[in-house]
Picture (tube, rainbow, N blue to C red):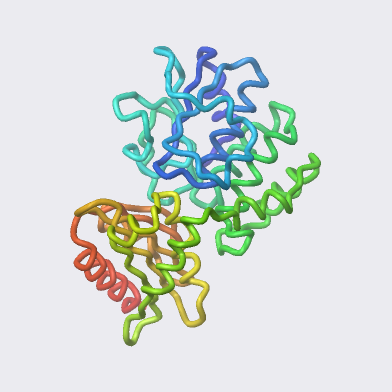
Length: 313
């Protein structure tokens, strides 16, 4: 059972230096939970540092960017947020993790202290529940957490959205944040290269005969031609899933020779179970895989596994 009080004690019970890690290609929930937590810990006299692999352009409006760095104090309390597995904590590869705060169903409780609630729609919800009774929720903290909630729920459209999700969002809105602007930036902000990558996704999309599956493969040559980076792959599978008649949508992007990034989204099918078979993971309706192999073979293997999962019903 998730224990918010115990989580707070674990966060503040050690020294003043704190290092916060999150997953590769951080999304709004990863960035929002890391920065929101850093702002909260700073307000009680801690010295947080946030380790981010990258910061997508659409999240550069977020408060707390001053806490981003890459020098980890030797005795820092180490925390991972929004990491579904130990090897997902970028920058903490050779570091023992003290605290694990997450909402992925695939999380295997890899830290010394684990605070995981797979029923939560976002890790930002968990951060709110942990800090709410201990710090003043400022507009800056609220902005970071709201951005994470609105992105991981797809603007409150995903099935993981609960009454508590809306209650927490309402409490954050009461701090006076510009919630409409946050949602616009976090959900719909696109760079030119992201828009071009979406164009490739639409151009290359295809279906699977007899199944409610829509997918798109984008080769390394195509990605290099438009100058896309890993941040530009976000939202592709979500777009495909929103097309009428689609239950499972997958984007296959070749990130390097012999390496493919797969994002899976669904309405009724457990894509986390599919992703775990290929070394990935996530949630029932949203999961990811980073897998070696040629893109055509990877796509064939993953699509066959999706068909098997659908056939179980």
